[in-house]
Image (cartoon, rainbow, N blue to C red; front, side, top):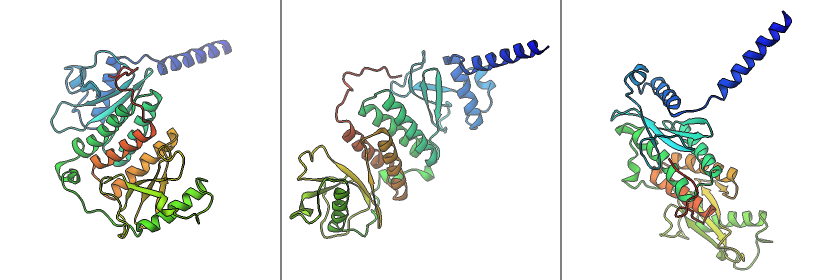
Amino acid sequence: MKNWVIILLLFLFSFGYAQQNKELTLDSLKLELAKFLVKKKQLKNLELYTEKKQGLNFRGIHNFSTVEKLENGIYTFSNFSSHRLVFFLIVEDNTFHILDVFSIDDLKVSVDKTLEFCLKQKYCTEIISDYITRLFRAHYTENMTWKRNDSGCKFERKRTKSVFNLMKLKIKLANYFLNQKVIENINTDYLYESIFVEDLYSMYYGVDEEKEIDCGIYSFLYLHDDDYSENVYYVIVNEDWIEFIAIDSKQEISKSIQMIIDFSVNHKYCYLKTTQIIDKLLKMRETNSYLKNAAFKLP
């Protein structure tokens, strides 16, 4: 009797393991997506898909063509109606992860997972930026009603002023350089004249030295640094405090993008301006483009 119990337990364990490692096929994936749409009340019932093969629009996000074979990559899916939510999907090595972008919290999680996947796949900056922009656009357009539409991209919003003028900001930046051992002391002649500050939001207009500067994301550098063109730093200027952001590692760029999203939401940036800033950070992190000689296949 004891031996039969052991055999039964081994059988159940083997069955559970096999189920967890079941091969992900196009048909099995579509069925899971249809179930998800039913759960989200985007599909009336599952029979609409299983019996009539209707209600599911599933395409590659890059080529936007009908999917015939699953490849590692990012996809988009929805129902076929004109008033529908748009979702995204990461397929990686026999697993999948649905990216929901309806709420701002959903968007932040999806951006983070997309960035993690793209960096792991060694996608070029242009592709990463394009994918992140699509997530933002879906959140602010397709997944919002017209009453909540992001009109800030059409009509410039008045920016919020901080308590800092340029000199006050440079004093804080000088202390940052001191802590980072870029400079040895803050009493150097012409120190503050050697700190260059640029607004990533409106980089072509410069920063007024006399007036209180706008809240925003700024880049800055120390011109006497031998490698100053390579050593660019970034800071978020809020109403009365600043936050430094970094982009050197995967963890740092991920955290920085989350901080930028929070800032953009609080200051009512439109999604185009937000994604433009993120795009600049990504390009500063990786200046080489592999778009023309891509070594990866995109669905």
